Length: 184
Image 1: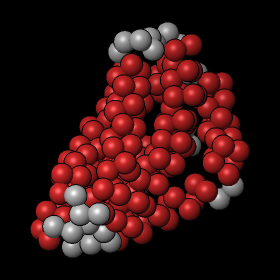
Image 2 (image 1 turned 90 degrees about the vertical axis):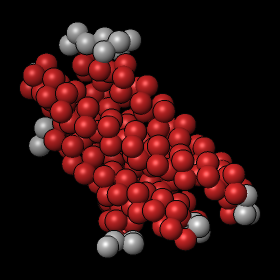
Image 3 (image 1 turned 180 degrees about the vertical axis):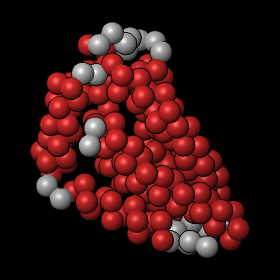
Image 4 (image 1 turned 30 degrees about the vertical axis):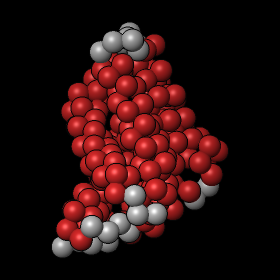
């Protein structure tokens, strides 16, 4: 499997959580109550799978390889992806920081929580679309077979050494569990 195919598969797992976020926001709007444990799981998934694993593969390996092949890190697709990764991290930080206040009944915090959950989901949906439809096809054209092999190995190393053996699968299961919650 090409490295970009591996990243696209991870996007499919992220989409499960983005769908769960949408259902949680709808539930909050409908009944005015938050399932705080579910939101904590979403934050955990977003910080560890989406950012620490998936974005690390992109930022530390794929983007670096693309820069070596002539793409700019300061403008164009890579710059946009990096900026959006930072925006996603900020949204998750606000969600995590606001959670305790919302849990204590602070109405403003509840509104901030909903707004940032929704904004995070929208941001990542647009971001994934850009990667899948623009950046990854570009990467497949620019990267030679040696680059592809080096990326495969680097991605495996991220999963095994940086995340820890079996952690990737734990987050896949968490995404599937969140996807089943409140399904229509």
